[in-house]
Image 1: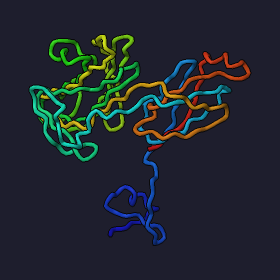
Image 2: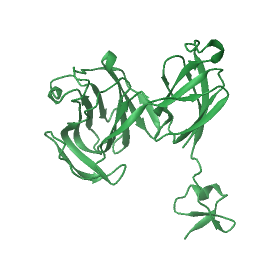
Image 3: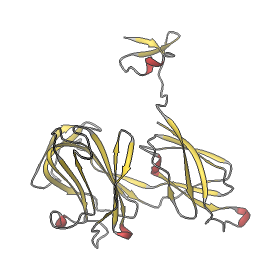
Image 4: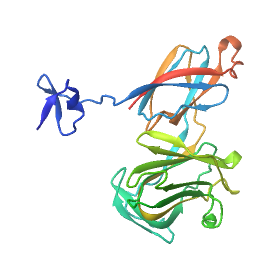
Amino acid sequence: MNTLNYNNPKSITDETYVGVDRNRLVVTTRSRDFGTFAVTTNGDYHTLPFRKANIFRINNYTGKTVGIRRRHNKIVVDNFNDTKFSEWSGSGTIDVAQGLEGTGGAEVNGLVYRALTTEVLNDGSEVEITFVTPSEDTYSVKLNVWDNVSRIGVGTATATFEATESNTIPSTQYKITFRFDKSNSTSVAYIEHEGDRTAQPTHSGEFGTNDMQDSVVSIESNGTTVVDPIIYQQKVNQTHELMFNASSFTYPCEDNIAEYEIINMGSDVMNYSDNTVTISLSGFYAS
């Protein structure tokens, strides 16, 4: 066993060594990173800003009562761990690959698609697709969500993103998050790489007449693309927790602090009628 002094910073960056402090083995979950954030809200729910984290603390010194809640129910569309692809169709091929998250992944060539969810798609729902771009110098990976399988190839996708050598790097892992605004028939694609996320231009798509309950996700690649996993984040109106004035709370998150949203509930001084006033809260996050 190779050991280093835990108090030496190099000992916690080299994964081949074990940290020791005063001849005792050190086990730690020391945070890799942390930072501060601010968020404003009024009588409407507002999402916390996107910051990669698995825990955050938020402070309420606004004089108002604030409601805070999770935004989504997480539905795993496919994590490919069972190495079975019977739910996939299309003219392309889909085979077993080393997983990006978990034990299994899928290797895609050509066009393949499958049902996304039978749940109603509400405003603020999201679809996440993690993938690795092909190794070729020139490539194209088209990721689409459709309201119905009949749209594929002939209609306008509900949400779309195309990865090419002009906007991505070969053999590199990315996550695409599609966020839906069904009320306005639009969606936004966010491309994430190494913790940084960039929004693409708003896309006007076809949402159909069945609340996206027949929705389909498709992947079309002219090279070999590894995908793992595909997640549907269904927007729901969870019961909020109350944060009273001069309080501070810590919350866990799976991926980032934007999994939560807050709302101004007003103050007892004004009989809670001042909930339309814009207020700002601050906090910090760690991962």
